[in-house]
Length: 130
Image (cartoon, rainbow, N blue to C red; front, side, top):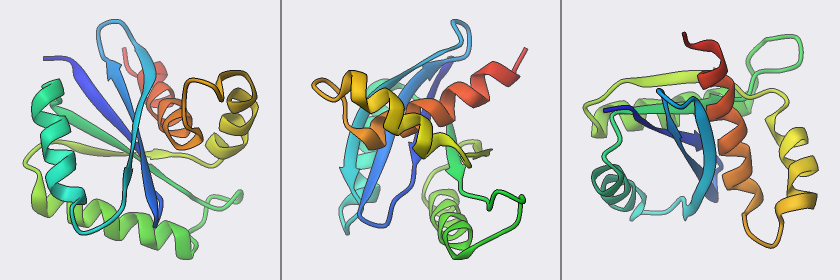
């Protein structure tokens, strides 16, 4: 079991990326609407893809502090922890949107910006593990 789901939280849309701890590569996967059906849809993704760990981006300020968006992401993580019995890790996503914008120029035909941001978040995590 080495599949990980990267998550880029947004109040309207949630970007997803799939990664593998052994191969250490993340790829954009999907974007889900952040609505009342989100938990059920995410549960199906987790089951279908055999995910065993979630990595969620947390938007800190450039100085490393918390903002309203940081607190919103933490509330989202709390909801995930209540609904899913698996490790849920936090990953600093300070520059992921800027990088996603750059990559989006190249991949816009194939992938959504939010899924690319999730890929960047997950790749950041994968790059740190041994």
